[in-house]
Image 1 (cartoon, rainbow over the protein chains, first blue to last red):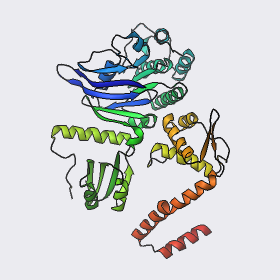
Image 2: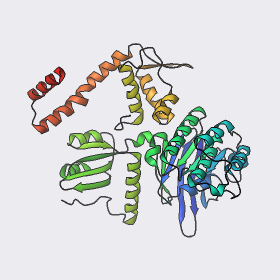
Image 3: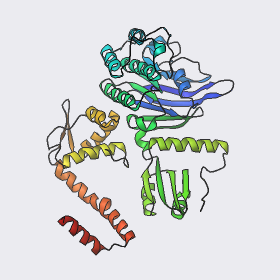
Image 4: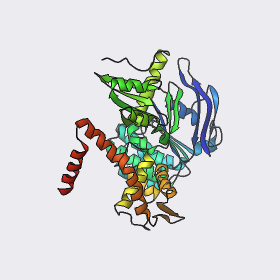
Length: 303
Length: 119
């Protein structure tokens, strides 16, 4: 079953098309990455999918139905928002108590364990918590709710590397034992790349890429060598980036079957392109293309 | 820990293969579960599962429903054979390329190998 289907989903504000014709399908029981630069439309998409804002155009199905004012769907959905606000007089323990009542699959033992491991002071008032401690509340709720569909929108602002790693370990362990659909939006792409089974990249409100991470490992390759050899290889290929240093050049290209061997045969060094590097190249190339549609996204050799 | 020049699930499969080759997993012994390996390597369980499936399809592992996965009898020898046939492409060819670049002849190379073995 697909957990989420959208068709031409759009949200236009007077000044900006926050989301513009997004059509995606997210299969259930997978960890999906929702990536994009700031302002790409990630949060808007999640707000639409959780019925918090209304679409300008298009349609969507979440867990088989429209989420808009649909208590059945929303009770199965947990949305951990970036910078979630809580009443100042609340303490984490109050927030967790409410969450325990709100989510049918709530697992209190897991919540208790997470509170301990993230060292969350549950009886301190919310306004005295640090940024990282506020994020920890969201993580506890997002994991302990065990909602069939869970959105994490940049869930770890202010958390250090140790705490982020703890989040990944808990997420994987709990996901393995209790498979469910996770949508994870983050800028820490390198850290989560291996956790994701599928990725959607948004850019300026549109889908720039929608693919399984397995396929992406072949989607692009890096080549380097003598500039003349590199350029000969680049001819007729889609170039995402090219840099030159004297008579040497390196480039990232969209790859097809046999390209890797062809590059090696041409005497070039071939390297893999990480998800984060691919993301940077795609969003940069897209920005360059938008600025001047006819100009290639490559620079000119400077030798 | 994993070879990042290959698709992740292939790297996962190769890591299990390495374990079989060096005797970490003896024939007919169980290998870790998909979830255990995923947690250990910090990767998506589906990716780990794909790696295991590669090995099941290749006859290296045997799936016993409800129990887990086990190293197939004869898997070690079969893996050795396969790795041997890939050895020339993966190790000898690049070695010769680099040697040619440095002006090292095939005879020099043979000498170097003999010396290294004797060390």
